[in-house]
Length: 380
Image (cartoon, rainbow, N blue to C red; front, side, top):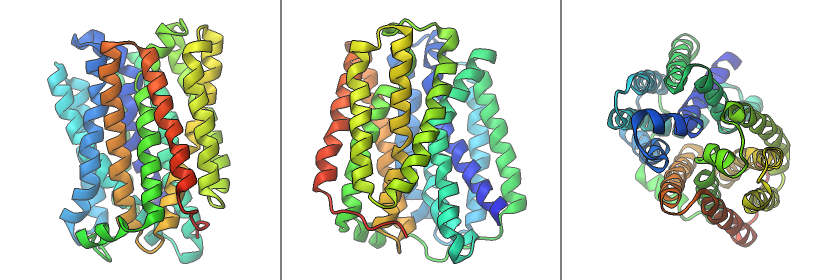
């Protein structure tokens, strides 16, 4: 059963990695496809928008379809989309391929939590959820740096080929390791509406929207930030992002235990550290060394965010995990898209420094939301 849980975790890791993969590849894609850096940022925006609506639409559309079949189809579509991205002769074709990726991300993420609950007996459910949603955190902090390193070694197309290969491997594992998973209770519009009347969940969703939009507004252009502000050599950006990912995993582990006891206080600490890193970057991160140091602080803070937000959502609606997670995924992915889109416009119109400060303002607004929100019950 733990191999089944691990398969779902690696699957969601591949999905979130696919969504964020272009972050470290934007300069290279911009140069080769002849578009501006801001326009290249649409490769993050488009799948985010599609994923947001797919996270709501797919669970409603598929009804009682066996979830094992649904996951297999989504993984196959992901592989196809990644191959098209790797072969894309133009930016238009690349964007079309990212639409396919967006569909798979939203659908997979929205049902992953409910699947994890069904794969193990009751006493093992907390551990299964930790493993599955650890895939989200791992992708958030490791997916981009690994993709960037691959892109530096073999080109940005090679990174998409690697993603296609991972999708095929997970597809094969899902077909052999996952049991039949008929839908026990299909998601309905009424269930989604009911969760929007849950004040604890709504508070967590608002916090998610602000923090994720702010973070990704800045992180989408982390490579130009390191190049233009810190004067970092392009050859070591992949290694710096890997360091970002490693400390992010540390933040993920630390926050996991704290968030289960006090998600609000944990989120406040995350917001203060992340907001400070973004504010100080244009002021202090003006050398390769100080830029690297602030990047690591940034990674530590954000690495703790996904597990804290997910814990908040599951604590707020323990008996309606699939409906609550669908809403959370919708907001999370839409926030990625809107944050990336807004920063794309700002980068082209002003500069990357402005993106960092605007992102910091959004992140720090979460403090108001968290302080006014009802305190979530400890995660069961």
